[in-house]
Image (cartoon, rainbow, N blue to C red; front, side):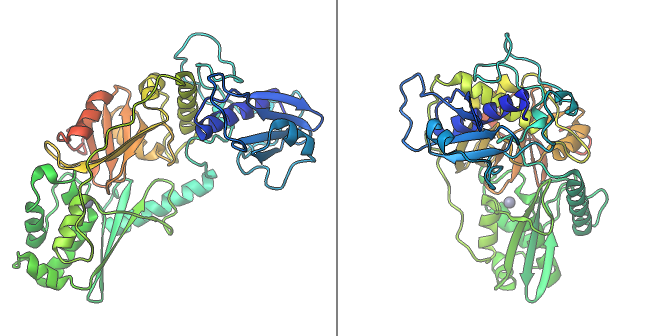
Amino acid sequence: MISQERLQEIARHWAVAETLRRGYPCEPRLTEFPGGWVVWSPRPADGTVPEPGSGETVIIDRETGALTVVPGLPPQVAMSRYTGPAATAQAAYPAPPLPVPPPGAVSTMPPPMPPLPPTTSGAADPLSLTPGPPPPNAALVSSPFGPPRLPADEQARRANALAAQLARLSGRTPAPALPQVVATLEVVGRTFQALGHTVDAEPVHHPAVMQALAAIPPGSRTRGAHRHPDLIVVSKALFELGGAEHADTAWAARQLAGATLRLHLLREGTASDNPAPAAACHTCGTVLVSLGLPGEPPRDLVRPEPPQRGVTGRAALRAITAEAVAATIAVPGVRHRLPTLPFLIDLLEPYAPFHPVLQSQPGAAQRVESFTLDVWTREQTADTLGDLAERLGAPLFPIGGEAGGLHSVLAVDERHRVFAVDHAGAWFLGPTLDDALQTLLIGRSTPRVRATGTW
Ligand SMILES: [Zn+2]
C-alpha cells in the first residue's frame, strides 16, 4: 500500500514534468479507482487547448505502488484499460531507492534533506502548483530535474578513477580540478597528451603557437584560451619535434601535417573510460587551423534577439524552479554537498526554467560565447563547486553553463557573486547575477581566481 506522501509526491513531479512538456501549467489531480489512482490534469483555465493525444497519464498501482505511464490517453480510458503494473512502469517515474513502506509506516523513511527556507508566505499544497517552498523530503523522490543519482560506491569509484587519470596526465599533486579536457595529439606516429593549464603560473607556448595566438586581437580571444589543452599539447609537440628556434606558422604546419587531435571532457560523475567528446573554443579552433590542423576556421555567431518572456505562468515557473533546486541539492558528491542558499529561487525564477543566449563574437575585452542560465542541472557539481568553495571561503550553487568550447559550470556563491569554472580554472564574472550577465553579454574581462581564492 502506497503512502499518502508518496502519492502526493508522484502527482507533484508529474505536474512539473507535464508543465515543461506541454508548455502550460498542469494542475495535478488524483482520482481513485479500483486499481489504484490516476494522475491527470484538467484543461488549462486560460483556454489553451491541449494537442489531442499529447502528454502522459500516470497510474499508480494500489497494491504495489508501481507506476504505469500511459502516453496520450485520457484518464478515463487509461483507467478502464488498466490491468496491472507494466514491466516498463518505472521508466518515467522511477521509484525512490526505498521499499514502499507498509500501511501507515511513513516514519520508516530516512531523515529528510534540510528544506529550503520558504520564499513565500502560506503553506504549500503538494497537489497544486501555487508558489510555496519545495517539499521537505525532496531527497526521497526521483525527480525529473537534477542530475541522475549514482550509487555511492559507483560514484566513489568514478571519482577515484578520474583523480588517478588527472594525476597521471598532469604529473603533479594535487591534480587539476574538474571539469577538465584531455587533448590527445597524434603526429608522425607519436602521441602527446595535455590537460588545461590550471596553476597560477602562465603556460609557456611554442613560438609558433604564440605567433598564431598574437594574430587574434584580444577582444576576439576566448577567455583563457592560452591555457586550453589543445594549444598546450600542440606546443608540447612542436617543442619536441623541432625545438624553439622556429617561430613561423608555416614551419609548424609542415610539422603537424597529417596530425589528428581529439578532445575529451572529464566532468564530475564521468566514467573515465567513457568520456564525452569535447569541442575546441573559437580561439583554439582558429589557431589550430592556422597551424595546419584539419578543419574550417570557426565563424562568428551574432546574437539573435532574445525571446520575450510573458508574465503568465509565473506560479508554475516558481514551482519548477523550487523543484529543480531541491532536486539538484538532493544529489551529493563524494566529498561535498551543495548548499541551500535561501535566495536561489528568487534569483533564478526570472530565468526559469532556462535562459539560453546564443552568441560567438568579439567583445569589449574578450570574446563573448554562448551560455545558459538553467535551473535544471543535469550534471553532478557538488564536489566541483565544493572544492572551489573551499578556496573562496563561500559555498557555491550551479546556475548554468557556457558552450563554445568552454564546458564551464556557472555558479553563484552565498554573497551572490557569480563565477565560471572551466578546464582552465575559475573566473570571477561579477558581484551579482546582473553584473555577471553584462560581463557575459559585453565581453568584459573576467579575472582568474588564483590558488589563494583571490583575483
Ligand atoms: Zn580553447
